[in-house]
Image (cartoon, rainbow, N blue to C red; front, top):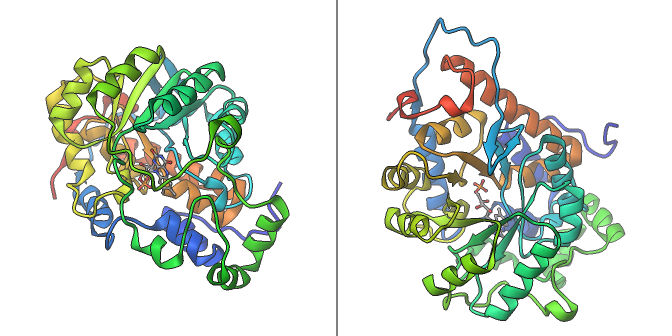
Length: 376
Ligand SMILES: Cc1cc2nc3c(=O)[nH]c(=O)nc-3n(C[C@H](O)[C@H](O)[C@H](O)COP(=O)(O)O)c2cc1C
């Protein structure tokens, strides 16, 4: 049923971002859209993806195209999944549930953040088994083990261990707005919310977003607490404790990736956290190319950071990814148009991937490789 409250006109990720910017309180938009430092790193990575040029091939019959991709022995109907994001319900009430339902509809993975605004159990049920749990690797082993056990009990088969946050990156756009997690409302936020009544009324009606995996015996989550004590020894223990698929997310260095492969990590997710951690970081898309060379052709590599179109997704596969994830674009789409906006954006990305395959003279994702791209 069309959403009466949203007049959604999304044809690109930029359209969704533009609408999200209009509809969200400044503080919330800056939390979602923001990056480390001045945001140069976030922009530079997107520019590096754009600078890769695709090589069209002609006169292959490409009538029958398949955008599905196998991942950990299951078929994802779409060649991209949803990156874990904390406090998604800030984009709109029930945003997490919209993402979980999208994952169920397309059999695509949805990452459930440690800092999710819906509990990991509800996300597992709503996604009909397509949820992957993301753990922030803390120095407190008991707390990490309790969450791992809880994810296991809830039926999770895949654990994503995020390792690129030894300290939370400084994100000036959040700092200027006084953004806090858990959410705090002071006079500055009050004015911001008063200027965005549609968002504020619906959030007031549904209750302010919570850190749903915490409280009671699971204690409190302090987003700013240091995780600097996490080390290779802790990774080895988690590999021992977790019997399912283990993905390590936030890797940019070939020798780190190689070491993880040797330690029995099932997949490495090459990511610069969407430029949210280190403004001067190398471009994640270039790291993907170098890590692919280091780990060999067969080892599973996932990629996120800066993908903004179906062409970008195809480029990531051509550079060496076995699966891709997007973060901000899904939040923009929800803020722009609720579940309808989310469906629209998903359809657009899927169509773009399929059309790009046709232009390259290919019929499926797994055939993509370095021969499809040239540097600018
Ligand atoms: C609002 C927001 C919250 C995020 N929270 C988490 C998180 O809790 N855990 C995590 O591993 N990554 C988190 N990320 C990073 C994403 O998982 C992903 O790496 C990044 O968004 C990908 O870049 P993209 O936004 O350019 O697609 C977050 C990203 C955003 C935008």
